[in-house]
Image (cartoon, rainbow, N blue to C red; front, side, top):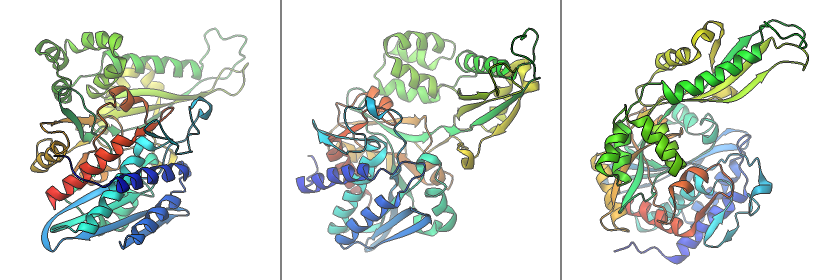
Length: 451
């Protein structure tokens, strides 16, 4: 039997998403305090005490809690971030990307899927549970800034300055809830690490009209880009443990699953899948290896001067257990004889980089059984499928502390895997009102089951 949540509460959550979109908390610079204060005002209007921590001008985090009458576990809604990424192509959108327009059963706008719908449903579920009370333990609401730029002013700041206020046994945040096959629902058990590198090359100046035999830094950088791409696609070591979960979730037959989880056959399966379903092929590729994507290049000073300096920025994502030495070993292998001429530096969060380790929580803990039960209250017989998130989230800070941390929501079954991969940070980002209702109920259910 589905959970009974009032239409008024669901409408409030929908309107909150719209208002959060309109606050336009684009990171950089963030300016998240607009949304933090809005949530603070909402909570206080419901009689809920909360604390706001200003971490930089116009930036901050919010913490609220509900305590039960008996001892019990601590469950966190969050960390849920209110910052969003920029919109490079607003003219290509069907609506103003910061209008928060509600039409055709969707809330439209930047950040709706990543992750303002989770912020709003966690806030509204928290309000509902405060009204009803919990019997044991604690429920913590943690709303943060700066996730899109590494969490320096958000979750990381709180971990360094007020760790006692966000101590928890379990935390739930972005993202999961997509239906794959026959009642199977994705939830995130972990994420890949980020090890962004900048690679510098030097050359010798000369006249651009006589390039023969020149020592051109831009040419070296271009060769490096092609070598890195080829190595990542064809030569880097493969791992298949995270693909087994995916095969089960997609309902693959024995032959397909065998191909997916057999390293020697995986390249062929990828090529075949790419032709029929390129979005699934991207996921398979990402979950089977450390990826290296050269996404930025700079070099040269004038059209007729042979370049003396060039650099490329490589977005490197690691699987759990792959450390700094592993990254450098394979980056140097990819570069080949160019490695001797390359200067490799680590990009820090201060200069826009990401630096984290791959991490994962237990995919079959007792708490996961409760998550499955919470989903089953809306869709009886549903089974959770573990998934490793290709991107980096604030949950890495909690997993480092041993906290069981999961990406957990419940999407409208009409949401496709293509929606999951293309809408976050993409054009016409939107979330359905049905997803708002289902995710609201899922958070309410898991709190009731846990506390």
